[in-house]
Length: 130
Image (cartoon, rainbow, N blue to C red; front, side, top):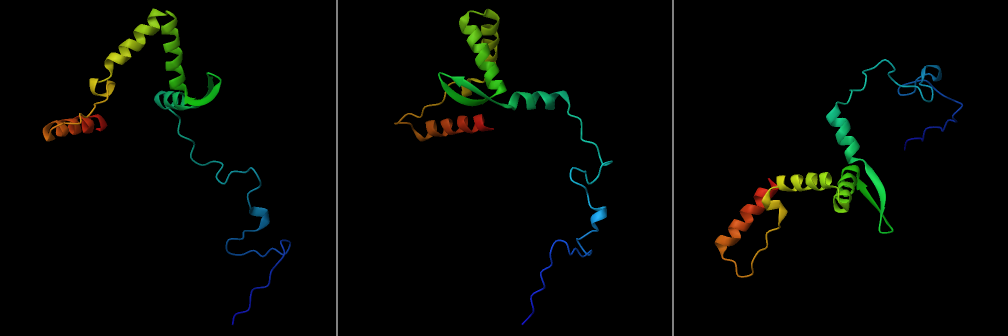
């Protein structure tokens, strides 16, 4: 039977593999590679995407909700359009016109559909996904 290694206190520090001398260890807050590779600069597209995808907490009807900044912008434009701002309404309607017809209205499957009709519904659903 092997003998368990003697436990050492933290003051009894032995230099060895995986245990560098205390004088050469990184100080708290010190980087391991201070002159290493710089961070890659973000381009405008990355910054815009990050800004619009950030989460915001808003209050709607007395309830707090967390939504993206993009969703909040669309809600603001919609609110302006409903109040009578024609530019905001035109902007939203133009965006809506660009949405493909298949994603505007969900397909309903009739109860008495034939196999050919079911195949067509399936094909249209697959086209929406891809």
